[in-house]
Length: 469
Image (tube, rainbow, N blue to C red):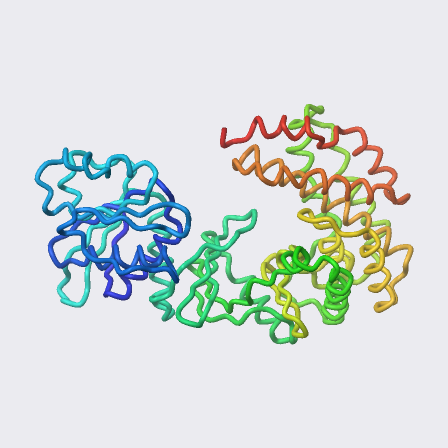
């Protein structure tokens, strides 16, 4: 149960936040006396779902039920049961059927014969201050976090903003776009409360002229950040629209890394050295071999090989700042302006090849090997690093990263019930095979080649054991 003291703006903000994540079959029961603000809440919810297509939302006191088309793909039912004389009337109105496949907002839920078991109750009561209400949320899923998001947004001056979810990543973080008139912002919700690295890295990047978003509001203890919206032109989308622009775009990405690596690594960034890289690749050994029918210890030799190869080929170069999750879906194209940057809170100090591998061996899309080779050559020409050693380190870091990614994708399916990442496995494995073809990685290649590849049969074997089934 979660309780808020809310004014009218905060009540609307809560409704809009709930509207952002509501799905077909969700039932919201609005309880409270006459004049408590139940219809005000429902109106804000419905108009938020409809966005630019928002309709007038009258009280359904006399019609009992009003229905609304939902541009997000379902239907919204708004019911006011104050005048209901017999619960059997709900069958005639069709509300019983709507409960399973529409989003239903029901005022005066005490008139129901039986409330749906999965319903979210929102009880609105008066307060000593006549301009405030006591709102209690109970039932439903994640209500405390939703209420906290709404309070943060309202406190930041965005109470009247429409809230729309944005695509997330493989972490527990969630992202939402807020739109208020002609202004947009992005809400980052990190329930772990680990916002300090993002804030520190944002300040450093902006202070050095790079394209990180401006911080608009923060609550680091609660795990909320409101940041400048850099727009929708992710490099990934630009490449889909204009594939011929790939050489120019990847040249810009390479030049960004050259510029970034000219600066000393900030002292708050952790190292990603040989020991850490070896530890990370343990994810592959822990999850993948057994998932595809290999012996549990079939990949046990990989971690020590990674550490030894790093010592031989990558330990003689001064580490640079690496943003780590550096790929086309975390970069925003802004024309002649600097590349927009997001999702860099896990930045590390590592070998200069690390982020280049991340961008050029992208799990989500194919990069022409000719572009990959041209970017490596471009980086080497700009930095003067030794060609032979850099390319060996590049192959090693690519192999380490791709093994780790395959382990993560396997775990996301088996443990977390997220099978969609399995579709990327063949591409990641192909990149891994290219990396392992480098002569310096021959000992590692021997171990990996003994394991089953993630072909269709292997992937279906993993999918069949998905935690969601």
